[in-house]
Image (cartoon, rainbow, N blue to C red; front, side, top):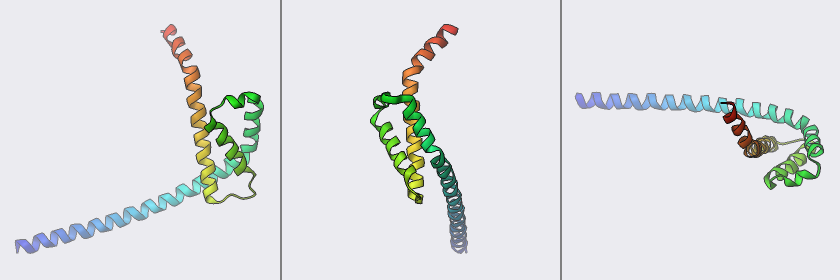
Length: 127
C-alpha cells in the first residue's frame, strides 16, 4: 500500500510538473512574440530617422570620423546600407537594432574613457 501511494504521488508530481513546464513554455513563446513585435516597431522607427542621424554624425565629425574605432565606422556603414534597402526582412530589422545598440555602446564607452577622468577629477575637487 505504501509503495502504491509513493508511485501515485510521484506520478502526480511528474504530471503536474509537465503541465507547469508546458504552461511556462507557452507563456515564454507568447512573450517572445510580443518582444519580436516590439523589436520590429522600434527598428522600423529607428530606420526611418537613421539617414538624418547618419548625416548629422558625418557632418559633425567630418574627417575626424576616421579617428573612430573600426567597429563604429563599420556599424555606421552597415546601418547606412540597411537603411537604403526598400524593405527589410525581420533578420535585417533585428540586425539594424543590434548594430545600433553596438554603435551606442562603443560611442558611450569611448566617451567615458575620454571624459570620465576629468569628471572624476572635478568631483574630487568639489568634495
